[in-house]
View 1 (cartoon, rainbow, N blue to C red):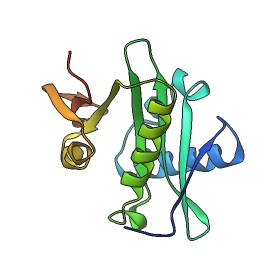
View 2 (tube, rainbow, N blue to C red):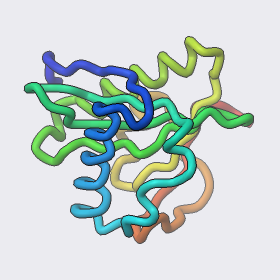
View 3 (tube, rainbow, N blue to C red):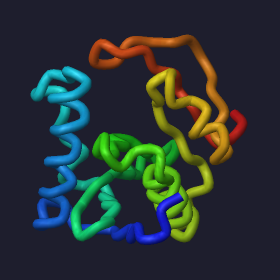
View 4 (cartoon, helix red, strand yellow):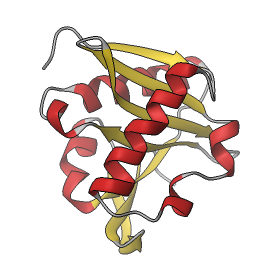
Amino acid sequence: MTSDVTILRVPAFSSLCNAAFNVRREVFVWEQNVPEELEHDEYDATATHFVAITEGEVVGTLRIVDLPEHAKIGRVAVRQHFRGRGVAKAMMQAAMAFARDNGQERLYLTAQTDKLGMYEKLGFVAFGEIFDDAGMPHRAMRTYDI
């Protein structure tokens, strides 16, 4: 794990959040071929955004959307050169702590199937069938029982 990663909660559409949107574009649109029109949605304006900063640059991001039934973590992205250093894990831990500190114990996400193991190590359990999201196989995951 990288020891010099800083995780910050940032306001939507601030300069750091805009840098996060650039990371999302790099990872999802350019690398994973997600259509640009699917990358941003109505939740970006109201979500709680987190960034990971290391080596002086924003290298990762995720967001939390507070819904009535759970907090949904999504848009988890780390620039390719910085993967495998614990950046996503550090962001997830910060986001999970933030949600719980704000009274939300029910955490939910949808994960690309090749990322299930990382989320399982953080306490998420996959459920339901594999489904397609933007051309990639995903599964729903949660930290709570129904």
